[in-house]
Each structure stands twice: as C-alpha cells, then as structure tokens.
Length: 84
Image (cartoon, rainbow, N blue to C red; front, side, top):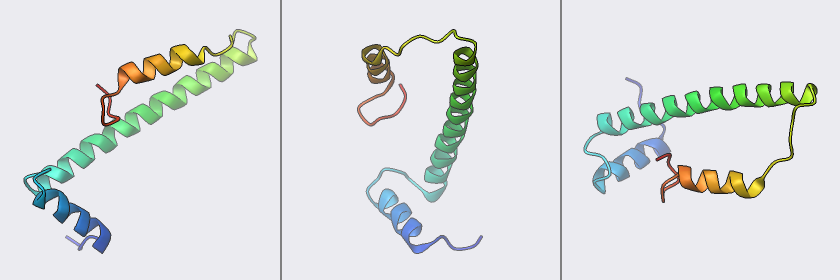
C-alpha cells in the first residue's frame, strides 16, 4: 500500500493517539461508511433538485418556508452535525 500524504498520516496518527479510533483500520472503515452515506445523500439531493425543477417548470412550486426547513434540519442533526 502506498504511503498516505503527510497531512493525512498525521491526522490518522492523532485520531489513534487520542483514542478516537483504536486503529487505522477502524478509522478507515468509519471514513468509508461516512463517504458512502455522503454519496447516497448527494444522489438523493440531486434527485430532489431535479424533481423540484420539474415541478417549478410545470408551475407546481410553492414559496419556501425557511423557518420550517431550519427546524427540520436542526431536528435531523446531532450536536456534532451528524445525522441522527
């Protein structure tokens, strides 16, 4: 396996040293899980945007309720900004 760039290697070593992760493998598995979730969320967001554009083009859109959107987002994330 090729060595990691120095900044990533330092980050990995710091996370292991501080006990955030027990090993490089554990950190890597978590990183892959998070990346997979981001890919899924990105695909869903793209689909939602295309659906909204289609609705707007057909005259079916409504004004955004920013307060409701904000409340939904706050309810959806934990104190670290991760999905609940």
